[in-house]
Image 1 (tube, rainbow, N blue to C red):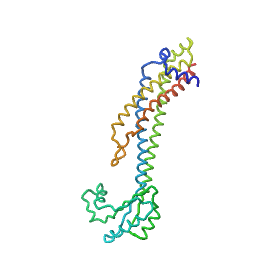
Image 2: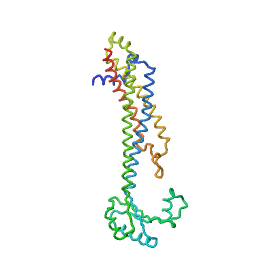
Image 3: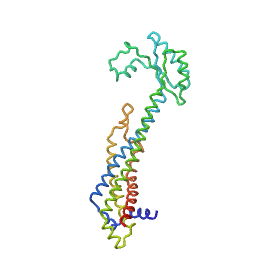
Image 4: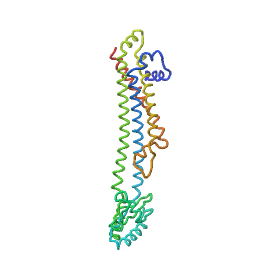
Length: 301
């Protein structure tokens, strides 16, 4: 714990003499910067995907959870009477906030994406649809089905349960996938920085041996590597995060009548969350470089 505190102080204050232990440029520096920037870029998009999936699951659950549809499947001469009977039942049904029969034009608009705008409903046995909006308490689907079956034999209630649950589950799994991706990206950053730190330590084995001969401690040497690689990871991740935020900003905003990909952009205070990506990269680099330095210095003893 004392070593970590001293390293943190060195990160803030800096040590030009210790910085000379680590090569300021070369393969390891480029690898660390590129890996941190690329992983931060992917992490921001994974975060955006996870948050958008959460919003999508909530929206689908709210919209489909408070709506239901009644189909009146009856001969043409009985359809109007059964529709009126179903509407009267809905007026006295607890949990129903509003119910109305869709017009012919509205039903034609619903079927237009599949059958085209020239569809003539009066020439097809299309059932009459009744839109049901539930209140905050919700209705009892089983009880409503019993009343409809007794008084309106041609009525079929669809509470959207078979559609709502799979959609919400799919969106929730996408959200979980986003967090899994962030964990995998974090592990990848740790692995890449560990490899880069090991390579830098091995390449400077002779320099480390000379430093030990003149009295430098392993803590002093490890502090130099930890500081350099942590700052590299922070700067690379900051660049990747800024580029990713610009890329997310270019995506279309959420639209109620559009698909899922229009809502991937961050919303509200969620724009603050990407700021923590470079900080997370710095913490990962700090821990990974410290572990690699202690292990490699022990092997070089």
